[in-house]
Image (cartoon, rainbow, N blue to C red; front, top):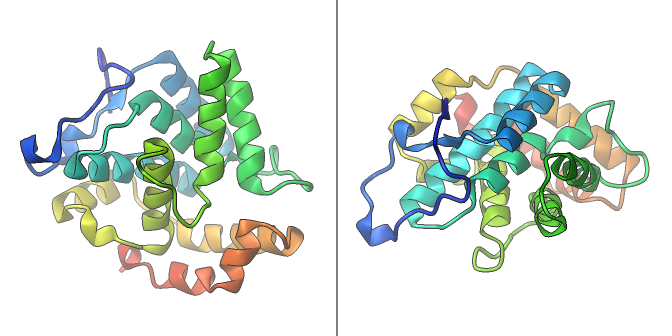
Length: 218
């Protein structure tokens, strides 16, 4: 679904100028960094985790399009592809939460992609903040969108805010496979090993039960 000629940093129009979003509106920017991030995610993620990462970008883009939220598409896509890289064995850390480990991987990846130090930091921030309970949209639109979209995909929170036709096509193209079982195991294991982490807090708050009740799996 890469679209040649799509500009990184594409900005959506104001909400009152918009028509309802369709799947074809959800364009992935065709940049070397985006292609590289997809290659890394494809190499290290399981099929379920890879599809989850792609859906996280698509849910975020759809919500932004329907709500007139301006965002930098390349930054959001790269962050979405790498946001769970800290869960895989090769990049798992025994000293920091998985989202922080993922932020470090993203910083290194973006340095290799030639991004400025400021943009490398932004990718790291977006990934770390996806585990926050809330990210203010006016302060960090990409962080806000990734926090929202990953919650949609993992626990089904606010999925009714994505148009039904878009939900159906995204799930057909990028099926959920075993993401619910796989992520429940991952977050539980992370929480047990890192009791001060957001993962541990989410497990204590019942995230595993919410995952099991995700309406996207109905």
